[in-house]
Image 1 (cartoon, rainbow, N blue to C red):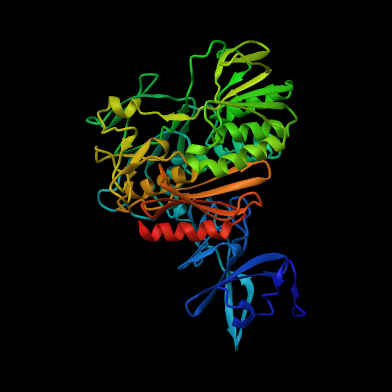
Image 2: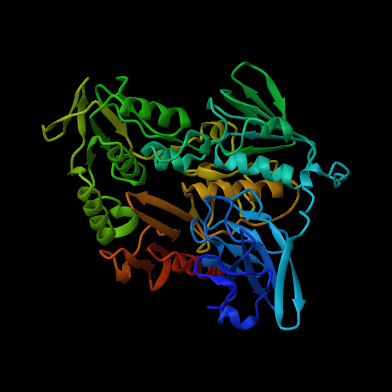
Length: 511
């Protein structure tokens, strides 16, 4: 290690580095003063940007280079190496760019480049012929927010209205069952943007506002107060709602589902005065809630009709590992059972077992909100049918997120309830509403936190005929591949973030 390098910060880029210091890699982390800077070799050039992802501070030097873009290893956000723009969610804020000078064999970085002007502030931008003057977004979740943000980022100046049935502004929904619920993330992390963002961006965000009807012929939506709102383009991003079973006692005040920020806040409040909790469901939300409540010190029981947790998504081997992981933290599983009834201080299972429960969370999954689309006469089949550009059977109406069912590479269709998918679909739909003609081709990706273990999953395997395991699941160092007819459909990883990125790139090349 040279005199101007440190083990944690890398080389001092103000003094310069040679290509030899990349040691065959294409990415090199260094620093300029106290700021972490990433160097990337792109053809014959060396480009420099901030080294930290603006989503959850992931180390971009451990990510993947894709042409002139870099992808974060944690949650696969994508940035331009030339402009710093966050091209792909879940990051929305750009990373800084730095000037690189060539001095002999050394590449020297001393100062930041001037930031590119925000396209949303380019008031002189002229509207191309046929561009909409009025866009309405129905839904205030991931897809709706991402679409609104992208419309303004691309400089569109028209009237933008977003109707959300929720009381809170768009929020970081994955955190509601993870760190926020566990008590390790502050409340200020949860909103995707502060209150000032919406008026400053001229986004007319209408909270606690329900759209009752869409009239495609008149190009209008009608809200619960009877008012009509015209649109030139409409995005349906109504998301999904929790599945509720007719369980006696499910209406009691200590029984919750989890979908909104208000739901998570209510569970946190009840957890503060509870000692025992029962979670119905062993899917991702149920298990994340169980881990979060256990982190708060509650005694937690998980009830599920399944034979093992997450088997239908991740297979038996990972399912058994995840159960063992949760049990090692003190959670108790009741598999092959359901809740027969709930009373003020306990639940009774279908096998007669009675469990003390001062808090009950029903985590049985979600179903897409399709009523608006069905009533409007849109093509629907277990989701709103869209083409690769996320356009519905009505040319001026688009759909994105949990409600959208889009064409898969094998001529089937797919609908995926992933946060990052919803955000990226919102971004693509926004650009297509402006005439971009951009297909949605991203490989689905999600992450799930289980105590100290995070699982990353790329691809989409509705079923498979073979599972291949590379590495050791018990050692928390593995890549689990799901194949059908010899073709890899999806890969789940633990402790192998780089492998997840590589597999995402490979699956994308096959799309």
